[in-house]
Length: 505
Ligand SMILES: [Zn+2]
Image (cartoon, rainbow, N blue to C red; front, side, top):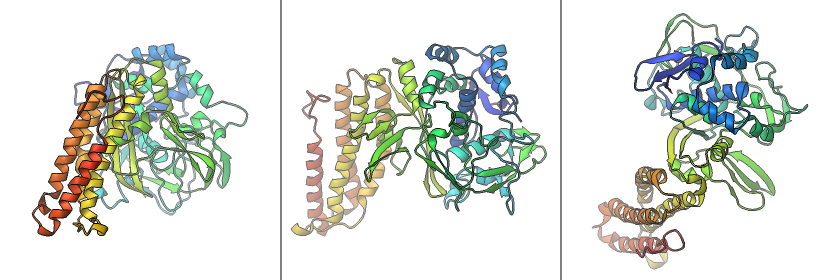
């Protein structure tokens, strides 16, 4: 199965439920409007990334004008065929010598079941609860390619010494969403002029994919020697699919398939990449550690909702001495090529504890037109949301712990944690809806209203979580002291400065 030729892309047409698998040519060249159609949002994101990477290496637009044309209109069929011609058999899942994202002759004691390739399906204590049984038993070629790609690029290694991908175990991926699948793809393909700046090609660069030139075991090499194709399709483990089994239903997409894969061989090897490979789909943080400037990709490390990360995902910042953060290159490109468009941003990733997946994250965040010039507003809204949460937590912490020096008794029950979860649940609706609708050049009124709403939310949540203890004689004083502490912290957040001038509340 050649990913550039055969029908493998799991989609459904707009306003239709009927799922089907189509070719890349039909996706790129027809006027039909498609959406990806897989039961798991992380696998849909992986399918999207895989498609973007295929177009990125085979036919990147040369400049912004060509990019805009590709986004707006389907490609001509003859042009598509000529663009793909040099790449035929490069991305072939069942190639007899160089199969896609695999190596031949993997030595393993026994085959690994396919479910190990479906990230988070096994290994975590909670996985039986969040996943339907039977998902990974046998996968069609398309779902197998998607799962291989996802495991290698977006997920932690298999554990037990298996390495993770070039972005670390659980990177956050940010992509631009267009009105349909075809436009979404082109919105995330970097132009060749931008590529030259980030991925210079010289005699030190290796750009054959790992299935044509496997990563040398035990070697250390600089990130800059990894070319674009090789990096986008990096495979950090030796994997070889077992021969396919006969026709039946695919457990990934649910489609009937003539050939299905139900297992693979895997083996680990070691390598060290010096520095960071500048993957175009992820935001980076740059920080000093023991006198050395280090870059790494952003990851979800807590259960806090995605809006708490928006500043890091969307706002470039230099915080002095080379430290700071950088948005993903695809976001940077969109900002430059479409300076007046609203942004629909897909944000996805896993949260892990070593090789186990604790959580799958997938959000679509919308930013109203004008966001390109409204980064200060975005920063402020996120800060406000975080500051009110902190005030609520601090007030309640006084209630939980008491104040020893004043003989104020603590309740000893972690109500501040409960309140934080409630706060996040409310804010998860509130803050994204503001970012989607706010007028970024006149934000004052909405920001003032947000402060008021969060202030009231903090008071309401404080009352809600302390209500069961309100009549406990020993805690009456503690509650009064804690309430005073909350008021003090909320008071300190009252509007000042340019964003909320005129609001006296
Ligand atoms: Zn499938």
